[in-house]
Image 1: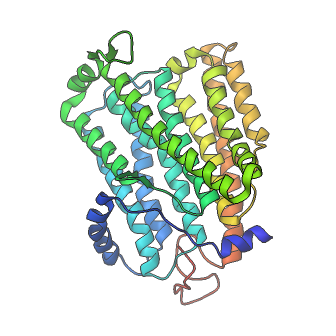
Image 2 (image 1 turned 60 degrees about the vertical axis):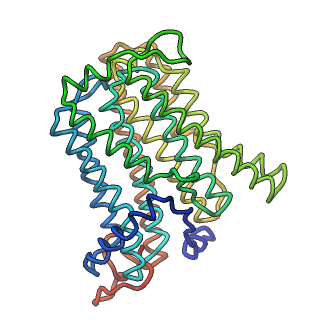
Image 3 (image 1 turned 60 degrees about the horizontal axis):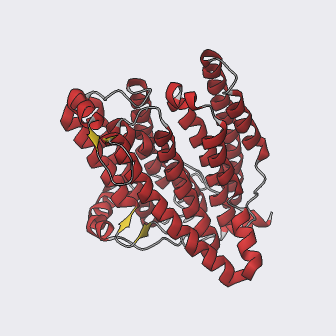
Length: 383
């Protein structure tokens, strides 16, 4: 198909480095130079992602309702896994260029992991801010993942993935979360719980709010400002290229994400935010990931992104409406089943896409060399 041919010839165009990127670049390059030449870049990405996924599961276990301060050791471990992920995420592309093994498959895998990492980033922030099961907790995740989708949407229309706006970008955000986790570790469970619960008077709210809620609100202001910039730049480019018709197409592509946000804040029973915040965030996060991964693929394949996502959006909306009628015990089961089914759906889609890309590009996903080549040498195509 034409889409596979476009993917095969796709060239990734990154955004500008921030001052912090430039400061750390020599460290990242030195680390990449120390890696063995047989180590596939996608494996570097995976080695950074898996420990962070483990810390996400552990934080879920210790802080299921976003109200329980984490043990000091867990907070330190979370900070470490965030640093490891951030570092290896910066190194994988350098390893790809060093081994002559860059490929569109690597971009899809790398950015797909980045999208799934949004769940862990949100979890790290909530582990320290302790906003509890509230609309602000859910809004923090929705704001982050909407901003991530908009960045991929912007790349679809401009050909450039903007990872920063001015001096602030992805690296600064990740290091902010690392230092936040270290702050939580230094405070200890009792000290952190007292710090997050202390109330502050803020000019935008009628009554004092817990520090944790204020932190989430400031986080929302940050990601929403980035989203507005991305939104404006993308629409400007779409209109410049194709006029009013381009605007209509670009706005239509936002319908699935807009629908998820509407369902999230309108259809779900408010008690779900309090009783099942983790499962609600996970289910919603996987759905955001699915739409974002499709946008990444469509950008690379120069294919239209389908605004019709009913096979996944309709069941999500149905579960949301059902939350108003089911008992807490039954809803807990339904959320578990819905998350499992959506996870299987997304996994099968990803597996099919990766297999098609591997076949077309003639590469492996997690080792260098082309299938059928006994030398296993890099053929210049793997990420």
